[in-house]
Image (cartoon, rainbow, N blue to C red; front, side, top):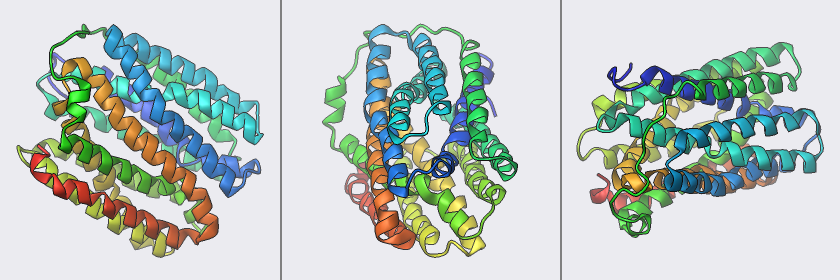
Length: 382
């Protein structure tokens, strides 16, 4: 599963494992915790939207520091330490205002971790970019381990117990970051400016589509766990469904180097949006049908796994060394940040106003709109 011995593959894989274990312990279950302390559906949607809003602005800030200083590894460590410290604030407040403040600070620091880790990984890979998936998949392994572990924990403990598990995962990520070797990264490498790259029609088409894909996923990440619980699924069953999606993601990460060849990034990326349209219909209209939910979670391999590999490969190819951190940060902030923010903010209102079936129908339409810029510029997606 690993790249050549000249690349610190075990340590790179370990940082992904630890960080995404934190994500897996936090993302699927934090809404249950908020619900348990009396937050309404609208309040939960706003709290998640706050995190997503910060993710619009945090990655470019950390990336700018990284590209200007070249100190990507020290910045990664700082981001992880501060993220861990601010996370502890959740133990001390249950008010909406207090939670909003904690999430603002913690999300700002956590928002820099993944883009910094990605640039460190691509700097280590150099010409072996096709091996990215075989390292990144360990993040998915960490995610699935945490989802299952915390799911079983919450079958026998109150929702607040997940805070302790997530804190342990964050501390582990901090410790793992100190095992990564320092790398020399040029701070003034030649190449097209970031603004110049952004003026390309294909780049804007990709970022627009990514924005819409993440917007469509916002309600899923916010309310899928609650949606399943309302339809009679137990906590461990919910954990297994989330984990099935990540298993599909792992398989895709492992197989993508074999599937991707010159000229295939565009068609594969377009196919992932078609899968998203189908997935959201299954989630919204057939929650009680176990087979439908199994299929919808298997489609996660396409709607996140293949989608992410294609997108980040294009970003890595288009942005030069001097602007690569900012390119990946823009991808993260415009898609997972801005798109996720709007999707999460709308989800709380839609959940109450129109119900889950129509809410997920709307997300299916949003994903289908993302096909338009990709199809228009498909010949330039290479």
